[in-house]
Image (cartoon, rainbow, N blue to C red; front, side, top):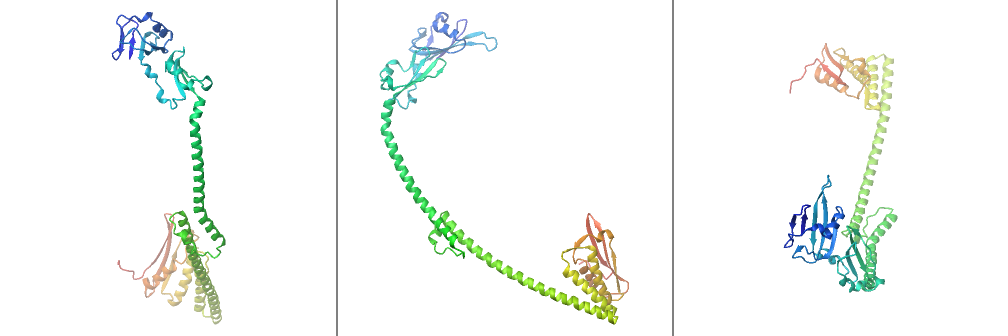
Length: 393
């Protein structure tokens, strides 16, 4: 129950069938004075019967003087009255036979349990077998009494049982650990021995008992077999690739020998043509030799535009012998573009296409024009002719 006693005398609160006598004047009562002396701290009035309460029973009361936070003006007293059972903490005591927990006031007044129950308890029957400590908070002391001798006797059997269980558990753990270690380490050791001695990368045909296992060991053995199979396929493929490379190198060497023979033959034809003063044959042999060297001997796929134009001019020199004066090759390329890099052999096929398909049958006045310019930072090359053209389809 709780009550609020105002400075002027009226009492407000809730008592649960317990109330304060109407004629009660608290100013002269000892608990009221001691509460005022506390200046806002709780005053605890131990177990006793409060005569100023109607239907009062032995109880513990707490009272506190209330003050205004700002003006410090006294506002009254808060009075709370509780049954002694509020301090019953026996349920939290897990060792009631050898331990007692008590709550007392700072003045020594026992709140829980009463003195009779403490003096008759075996836990504190011998002064040499208990210890106590105290926690102070709002004038309350929480003490505990522990009978070490009784506690040791109670836990003696438990200690033996725990040691026995620990020994059995240790034995089980050692046995299980050995079995698991043997189950796991033996196949791994077997596989490591195979890896150390198997120089020919043979399949694990003799270890099917491990390969059939559904756990990680089986996965490891199957992955080893897959690795060996993949490695053998890779080695076979590498051998085939090396054979192909060797074959390509041989063919390239043969082509190089043939190209040298062809160059030498063209040089011989040019020499004979010059001796015989046959200008057309000399021109064709020189132009054809230059075209072959450009096509075969150029180390990079990127060449200058100037080099590509020289290749086109060599092609044109040969075609002019075939079609003497029947068409004209016009090159309209600014000098600034001629040093720029382009892909090799992109203009000559276009000029050839214009000659055979655009002009078809060359007539006097026909021409093929190569023009170029820079557009958006790119080289724009155009090959055009004044031939018969083509339809939209």
